[in-house]
Image (spheres, rainbow, N blue to C red):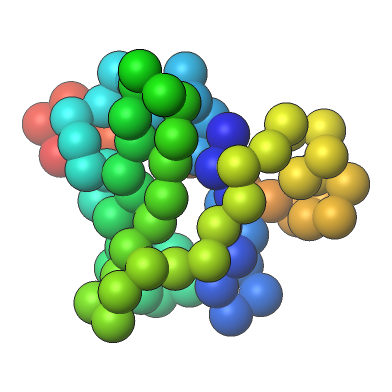
Length: 81
């Protein structure tokens, strides 16, 4: 999963969800528009915003959650949205 934190808001982007999504995944985190880029072959992921790359962490869920216990989990967009 890719973990991203902006302005104290943390969200986890599971690779299983990113694999099913149309790239890049567009999302809003802490009121800021971001894009999550994922390469399913290498299982590499990163996030960008209007000003460039955003720091993120590729990690196992249990490790990320231990440092970010209030993490939101990205579950994908509903069809038609």
